[in-house]
Image (cartoon, rainbow, N blue to C red; front, top):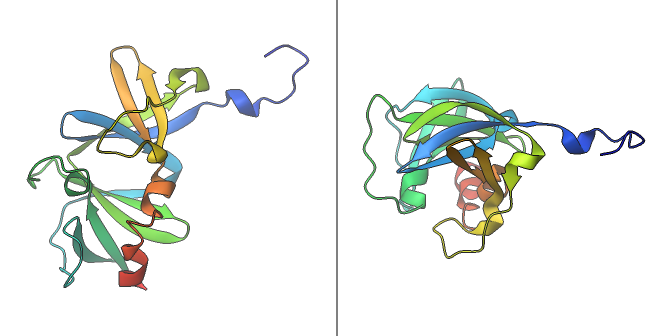
Length: 161
């Protein structure tokens, strides 16, 4: 950017909540996160896909709980004291996402975000913002809005509505 350029928005750093699924570290926009909770028992819903663990009542709101480890086929999930439910608020809907653990909030400048390479990964690159690079770490940045509102996740709306 040169001195005459007045648009500062392009260089605005972004904050991501980093979490782990299996061996990988992911990041989602911190502004979508409503709260973090431990994993509690859920009420199963008949005929729901396996990755939708069920629903919980969160202060009067029925919240679907999605286990991302099952969704991304990352082996058999285990639930322990480190298992976290990230409660998201996406387009006015509240959704819980089960992850192995939550690390921290990471601030990335646009220069630290690289485009995601095209590869036959478990996570469709349509749902990736890119890869966040920090010293020795690499965060897989997920476009959580797109992922949760995608057609395959659209079951949430039908079940909760």
